[in-house]
Image (cartoon, rainbow, N blue to C red; front, side):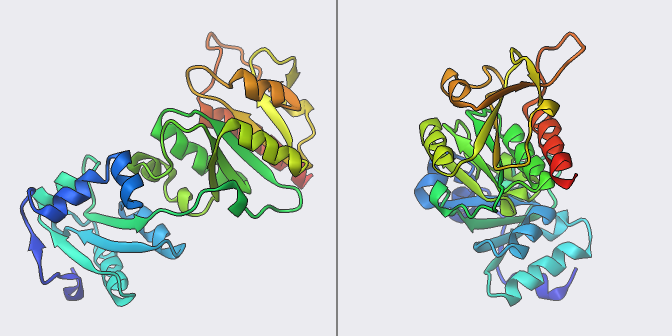
Length: 272
């Protein structure tokens, strides 16, 4: 461990007020009220710092570090003016949301997720997710959007928020590279119409397969919740309804897998 990563104060108690305040950020109401969220893990915290996310504090536990890179991250954070505080193992486990934490956790400021802040390319490729319930799936959608080079992920009528710790974790830092907007389904339909963006809705009942649709122009892929799929409103507003042919007993794919299949067909068409 680098000596510069040693804190003057080591918090051991799980009942310490700072530890309790950190733990409360696992609740959405607390995140919304304080406009702060947790970034846990070496990879995630590194990517947040690389993307100039406003990290307010870093908490660390050297006993849980998995290599010298963790201590070096703390040193870099301190050098950039971010306050760093050491926690004992029990206190860190109180605030961690993981089994086998790696001893690094940051507190960062949330940011504006309005549609108006999105900067689009000339022929944008967008992913629109309506009422996705599971944080792990929303995080996976962020990773998929990042891999496909999407201009943005638009979350409609959200059930889970983009700053949920499990979204941050499952996105593997893609939350910090993919622009995100949050709005209602009605708002995104009007917004896309005003910008000439053609919407493609996935539906098992569609007669046209996803590879038969031209995705080279401004396009948005619409995906619904894990349980119910897209709402009738978004299905009715879509320019095209497309299906992903399936040969097995299951009639649906995981939402992030479905997104990857269709988005990478769009990538293929655009490169061709």
